[in-house]
Image (cartoon, rainbow over all chains, first blue to last red; front, side):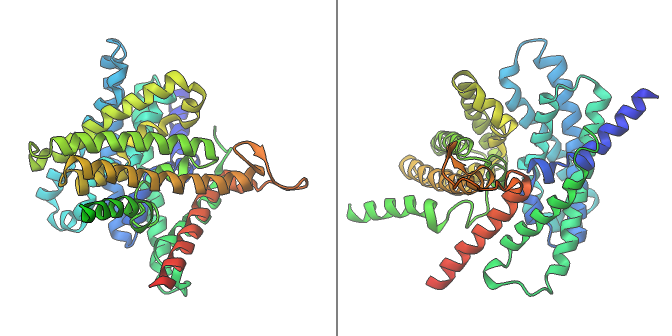
Length: 196
Length: 202
């Protein structure tokens, strides 16, 4: 029972309290780039969730069963980025076959998931927090994806309404999005300290 | 010959203002926002990015004729990852405190869109010399923005620059500037100001 409780806490903490977008500034590029329409934002969030779960799990396994026992820590970044690139390729092939319209609408952003900081960032954070429990690593990876989806969907919802707002000429586009994001993080900071 | 010098100057200046990676192209936002709590980490980050950018542009430019299109991005990321590992080990050995402060954001240079974008847009099409100039221009432009943002945030959050107090005595530090909010809002306003300046010119 203790274990289940611990895993639930880890999940809640990565989704809300330590949300990668709001507190760690990871994945800002797609967060600003794809958050124009809510359906696309949701699709992007799901794709990222899938890739991050795969990548987080595999990098943990590789780190603990190959790199650390054989003293290959130096090649850690190169291995991590290879795993992520492979996972993205997998998602790309799958989407092209099963959901062609979604694949079309993603365009350039799909291969760019490889360079989404949230994914490599999470793999590095799992390593940095020295998580030595396999289940916890999986839960954290999945939670990070859900947290990203949550953030990007909230942002897309706000931006859809922002279109009708009267924004000063020079603040249109990226600047107002950044300021909105700032206010959002302020809101999410209310959760800080709830869980470690 | 004169023509050549002009175009080199243009390439260099493009990175600093006309096509500034942060203001114009909105690239490399994650480190921009994350490490700019003070000037010092911003400067370290900027210098590391210049190092990686120059090295990766050189390598990509040298192997541009050998690249197969579908393996392109993978080769870019792998060569970038190699140089980031070098930079990371260097910082760990000679500046351990700074390395701990930057934490995972230093390895995150690998996925900094700025570097991949320059490899794709410039180094894979141009010769060695132009690529190096372009890398320096872009890198310095990026570092400048980082330092300005870091300076503003450090000044308002602690009343000091480079850890030397400069504000008046009863200055109340703005705690929010240290938090994520400060980064987002300051960068948003800076972008707005840049838009205002360039809008007037046009």
